[in-house]
Amino acid sequence: MLLAEDDALMREFITDYFVRERWDVLEADNGRTALDLFEQNAVDLVVLDLMMPEMDGWTACRRIREKSDVPVIIITARAADDDQIMGYELGADEYVTKPLSPRVLVARAAALMRRTEGTVGREGEQLVFGDLKIDRKAHAATVAGEPLQLSPKEFELLVFLAKHEGKVLARDYILDSVWGYEYDGDPRTVDTHIKKLRAKLGSEGKLIATVIRSGYKFEREP
Image (cartoon, rainbow, N blue to C red; front, side, top):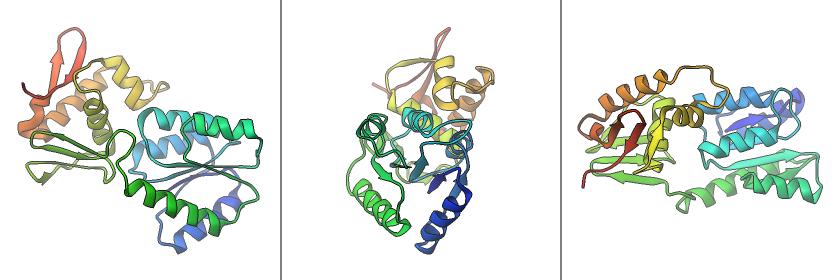
C-alpha cells in the first residue's frame, strides 16, 4: 500500500495499523514523492490525502489514474459534496473524511481489495496474446508459462502497449504516458526500453512492431 499524507503523526498512526494487519506500506509526505514511489514500485492500493505540498492529492490521483486502475482511497478533512464528487470523478474508489478511525480505514481498504480481486478490473486484469500472458493484478507476465523478469517500468510499458493494441503510438506519447509529462528524458528512452522488452519477450517480441517515422504498435499476428 502507498500512503501519501503530509502530517507525520497521522502518517505514522495510519501506517502502524496497516502494518499490524500485515500490509507492506510505502510512505510519502507529498504528492510528487507519492507519484515517484508509485512509478517505481508494484502498488496494490493507494491512500491519498488531498492537501499536500509540491503536488496535491487531486493531481496525484489524476496522474495515477491516467496509467493505472489501482484502487485509490482519498482521505481528507474536506467533507463538502463537491469535493467528494470531484474525487470520484478523478477516479477515486473510496472517500474517507477526517477525523478518521485507522481501524475503519484498514477495514475499508480490505473490503475494497476483496471487491477488486473478486471481479475483473475496469479494463480486464488478464491480457493474453498468444503465448504472452499479462496479469495486471499480480504485476507479472509469462511467455509459454515461463515468468518474465521485468522491471516495474518495463511492466508498465508492456501493459500500456497491450492496452492500446492495434494503435500506432508516437514515442513522445509513450514517454508522456508511461514516464510522465514532467519527465525530462529523451524519446530515445522509449527505444531503449522497447529493445530490452522485446529481448525479454523472446518469441513474443514480434508483438511490438516498429512503425517507421511514427513510433510503435502492439499487434498480434493475423
